[in-house]
Image (cartoon, rainbow, N blue to C red):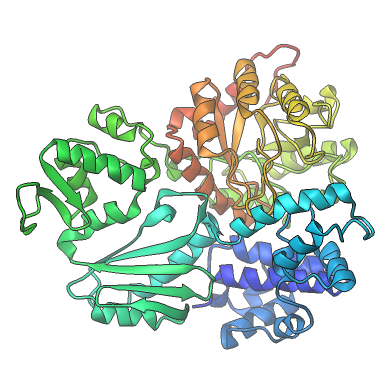
Amino acid sequence: MLTNARIAACFEEMAFWLEIAGENPFRVRAYQRAAETAAGFAKPLTEISQAKLLEIPGIGKGIASHIAELSAKGSLSDLEALRKRFPKGLLDIVRVQGLGPKRARLLYEELRIDSLESLRSAAQAGKLRGLAGFGEKLEASLLRSIEFAQQASRRMNLWDARLVMSDILAAMKAAPGVRDLAPAGSLRRGKETVGDLDVLCAAQGGAALVEFFTRLPQVERVLAAGETKAVVWLKSQIQCDLRVVPPQSFGAALQYFTGSKEHNVALRELAQRKGLTINEYGLFRAADASRKKPLAGRTEEEIYRKLGLDFIAPELRENRGEIDAARTGKLPELVRLEDVRGDFHNHSDYTDGQESLLDMARAARDMGWDWVALGDHSRSLRVAKGLSIEDLRRTIGEVRAIQAKVPEVKLMRSMEVDILKDGTMDYPDAVIEEIDVVVASVHSAFSQSEADMTARLCRAAANAHVDIVGHLSGRLIGRREAYAVDAQAVLEAGAREGTAFEINGQPQRQDLTDAHARRAVELGAKLAVTTDAHAAAQFRYMELAVLIARRAGLTRKDVLNCLTYGELTEWLARPRPGTRAKSH
């Protein structure tokens, strides 16, 4: 089955090669928009008719025909032609922070640099500084970034991994003799990136299942295959392991292969203290050398129960105190996706989003949310068509007018307001007070010193006009490292003022991290789980934001999105020094 993730990857690559080739920027952007649409779309695009495809924002006739070609042939002739024009290694080069398609093309044309290794060699030899737009400082920075890019290229972000896993699980449901099926490993625990995929299958006998798995159309090559286990390399460019276990051991195997290693070691030590032993086959008495009479094993719940523990959610299994909490009945009741009532951070086509404010409002309604704060970028972010004060005020009026067309969901106007270099806001205070929800974020001057960046973010977090600080670290997973900042100091500044912090679910951000989110709550701050959606389909990124919240041990009371509209407006109108109360 051709997944939306693979369609998106093809369009992303098309956009890249077209930009390398110096093609029309509008054509490049069309493929970038198509990739964003495909990546976030819930329903498989291959199951939608050509006529209906054309109704989706970001998909025109050319893109629709490409989807049809991919569905029929599994490849794209235009993409294959572009691949033949340039070295494949240029794709790796643009993953290095500080390089984009234009610079990658310059490096290739001037120095024949076509891989990370040749880039490293040229930088070490001082050959880059002579090129236009390059200098000694950038050359040194690139050397530091190459290692980061190489490490990142070996892992897949959680969103893409979940899409690939969903596709594999759907295919495996048709396998003969399947009793149960589940993902395991770091993906199940909600880690932000995944090195490989683990699929666990309950069945009596595994040979037929292994053969079925290795013959899936998603498989590029088989690395190993036995009676109950197979290892394959997928066309999605990630390793996938299948393990087949008997139904009576499924829970034990699921617990074992979910991990983490540190959690399992602590669990094994607990079992030993109780005169028990635990492995992927079950929980046994230590004296039972035959291992034929498990005390538990069919479900994870009974494994934990027999050890005297409450069930520990997979997201918490990192040996960070969860076992003691489970033993004493102090595990948090984790926030769930269904607890979320709305979103604070998204973008419409007034700035760099793909769809209108009305379309985004309707999509929020279709998500089943009670309310949504419809957002855009502020004026300084010109690359994203940030709104002038006049345009902002006009769109505030538009949101008020749209409310009558979408009565099922309460609408607010939010703005992602840039935090300027000195920590001030991108709009005057009098203008900011007209905005229902203010998300303050850094989008420029990433190379400031740690002291300057910390002071900048602390000033914003302590600003009584700011409701939420957005994507605190500024990282883009696999593309840009976090800027230097003392996160503890910023979290403390926000907590003192009553400012909330964002857990951004955009796959390349996933920011705050679970560790920072947990610390924010310990300091007394509230958290906002957000999508940073640039298309209606990307509201699904809320799944990642909630996963991070769960890994942080957050409950409903920690998360602003769990408030009713009335409760939220009360929170937004809370008295803060130097501000006028907001009305809704």
